[in-house]
Length: 178
Image 1: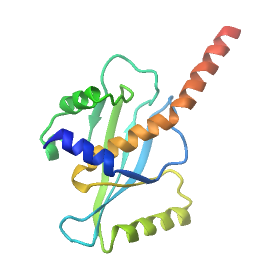
Image 2 (image 1 turned 30 degrees about the horizontal axis):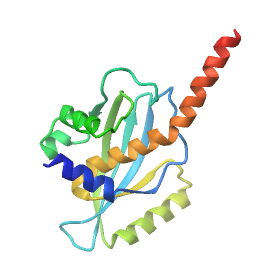
Image 3 (image 1 turned 180 degrees about the vertical axis):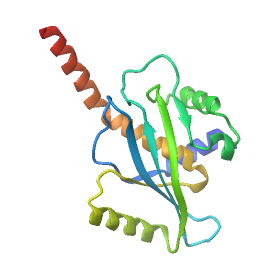
Image 4 (image 1 turned 60 degrees about the vertical axis):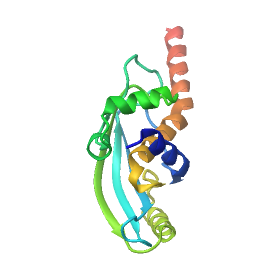
């Protein structure tokens, strides 16, 4: 697999259709549930659905000096590259993630009859009915979903960075007052 090609396509074509409403907490392990949709490459006109969650262990923006660990993304089994290659690849491109553990747990894969647009509409309606504010709906290229999931995680970490910084400043102020 050409990592550069996969990364470029995933970053260009990944769309966070509906994001999680809550920010990440830097103090505990977070579970980011997602439903990933892509056009089926086998059954033209149908939609591939992958459900899962990424567990991020204490996603603070305060970074230790070691590199992040990715488990369950399938880079080695499906792409033929090991995690160290992915880490180096991302680092060289200026992509930084908290240097912690990221574990992707696939809950299932399904084929849904009908177009991608119909699947998006269906899941948005389901989220609304269930009042689900935590599951993210992602669209992207099916063969490079690994990178699409990383794009989603990076977006969540980036979105939460300002609250992490505010918490850090509040903690420092409290220490000074003591």
